[in-house]
Length: 78
Image (cartoon, rainbow, N blue to C red; front, top):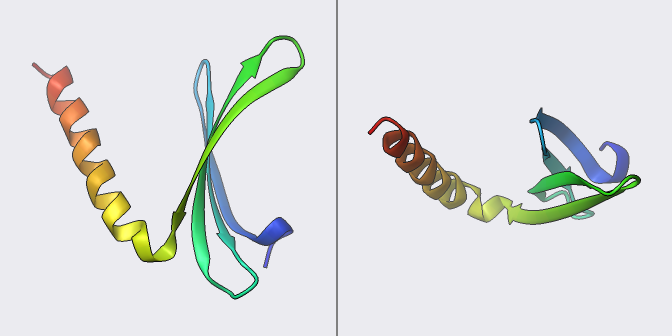
């Protein structure tokens, strides 16, 4: 197990925001994903928003997220 239960982490840096995709393990050994959006707020601070997707929900979450991404891609090509 990693720091604070993290077993995997990746990030996407954009011009205004950073997105983190963290896979963590709880005390029981169950995995969950924590998706965090972070953006600079003022000189020293950051505004953060986070969602947690539990292992038993990950397939349904991925399926619906893929539909939303496909919709955006199709809308852009019109």
